[in-house]
Length: 226
Image (cartoon, rainbow, N blue to C red):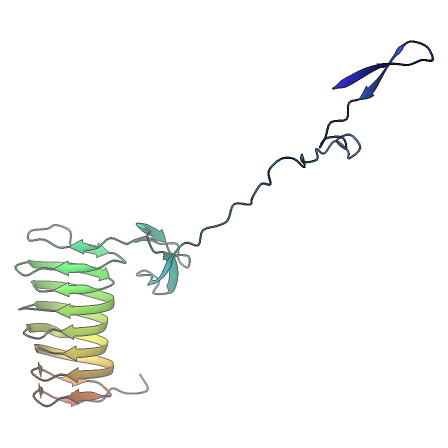
């Protein structure tokens, strides 16, 4: 914006820059506009902390963190697409191949074979056959019957259950409150509570059988070098 002023010397016109508050140094500062000192301060946008949770990738087996509310995620280690849904298997379902960071429930009355499941926690009450791997806990209730290879971090046989696993299950730790038939391999310990019964070989470095609990079968000590 240009201001025109009359001079007394030649009664002609000359032009001078119009100095406005907050912008008087615009040209002097190489064309970089100076913020108006009368304008309200602009606050920087603060970043909101996103709640995270740790998961175990079911493809590479490594632990990583993903947003707690994520419906799906990509493993930062192997870049595999990870599903986070909780899944309930219903009678007659054709979904036999399951991969999820969520939990899987097999209700009573479900009879399925050919299963291939990888999940976080599994709650089983039906009769199924296949391979099951849980990064968390496998909980058996009612008259659950599972045939195939079972691998988990922890096994819980609830009170009142009459469960069967064939050929057996490999876990870190097992808590037996009800009745379980099958071989149990535990890298850490097996605890049979009052009223609990384990009918089958038990391979563990530490077996605790409470008063009122029973173990029928061979007790084995795993090879520490393996």
